[in-house]
Length: 234
Image (cartoon, rainbow, N blue to C red):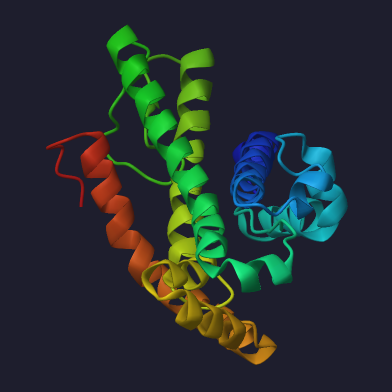
């Protein structure tokens, strides 16, 4: 691993942990608003990382750090508990709860995009000639502008990735649960029960891993061209 990648490691981890926690806090808040206090009672309607880390120490600490040292990327997970009996009674509410996690990530994509444009307006950022995952914005000078540009670039890209990956309509991802929004309550419940099969979840993750790059690449380019309208990134 290069010295530059090592130097970016702490920034990556802060952004990763915040983004994953924001996602799960979105689930937890939506569940509470829908009548399920399970996650709230465990302290997960919060951006405090400790309740989330205690629940998933491997997914929030060990796996992200190991994957970064191995590949330069942070992979990991967190989770918010919910009452399955609540899901049985209110399958549509449970579907909206599933959608709340990706929605939280999209809100961070939008926020980082706004901050990037404010930086451009202030003269500290500029659009890069060639964009990449950690190079959505470029600092107009070294030091703090350059560091802030990298931070917002990773925040933008990572949250876009988390949102799109979780929206894939494949079990056990959020997009699969969110399908229930478009079904009757009875069919939404049947669909949720079918999707809970461990074998479907394993197969679904393998499929998602194989197809995700083909899905994310065009979405990433589209997002870049929306951020810098008319820039013509390809």
